[in-house]
Image (cartoon, rainbow, N blue to C red):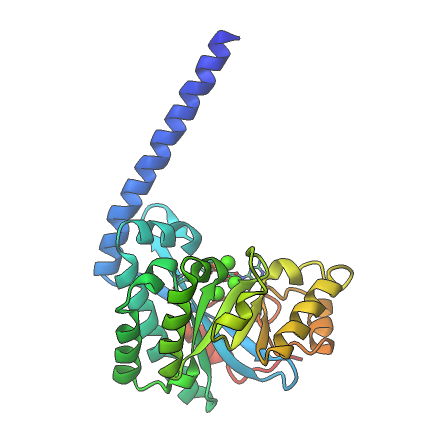
Length: 276
Ligand code: C2E
Ligand code: CA
Ligand code: CA
Ligand code: CA
């Protein structure tokens, strides 16, 4: 038993070391990938629930690692945050997203919007406002077509600073969304304190629809509307979920049923598409 315990400990230690090594390697490689612009931005389409029209896209960053293959943002964004690369990465994604949505907008003839995820670290940097202003200026994207997605956790870090910062961003004309809404601890009180335009109903609320979860999802939609916010449903995977959301008055939807995140080129050829 003693040996088994020691073996477990040995294996645990080896796993810790391997995880640390992978992280250190990823950190080096991410630095290089950024420098050589070998990250990619994919776009997932968003559709208006009522008109079924394509209304926008969400920018989702991708990394194809030369050895490890595809690495998801859930793994490398935290690395970028902890090693100080998130500013550069976030700025690059934001600029690329603005450039691409202008192209997609011209291609489709629709004033499409683009939603860009903002990490905690980015949001904490006071220069972020200047970065956004400069990118809007240099790309020429009308501010109203840019949405910035923040999570509840980011806001709760420092409530009064966050509120002031959001007001400043919003005075540029950009729209502010709360991502993964309902998964945090503090969902209600802050709706009053923050200048928000939109809630993104987390896919954990969408998944059980329509058999279960209708009360919760319905309550979020009603709550959002009572605060004059629009609601985007995330993770729509079935026709039944789609029908339920449409009937419940949800504004915008996004999910694998309607379109997976894809390179700009793929969207260009699929664009013009409306949901059946
Ligand atoms: P998120 O912002 O909540 O993005 C939604 C995630 O759900 C994406 O994963 C998307 O591919 C996935 N998804 C979309 N539709 C469906 C569906 O119908 N079913 C299921 N099961 N999943 C769906 P992804 O692209 O792996 O991104 C993961 C997270 O990484 C994002 O979650 C976001 O928090 C973060 N992220 C992605 N791109 C960026 C970025 O450029 N900057 C920052 N700071 N974070 C990013
Ligand atoms: Ca998001
Ligand atoms: Ca989300
Ligand atoms: Ca998420």
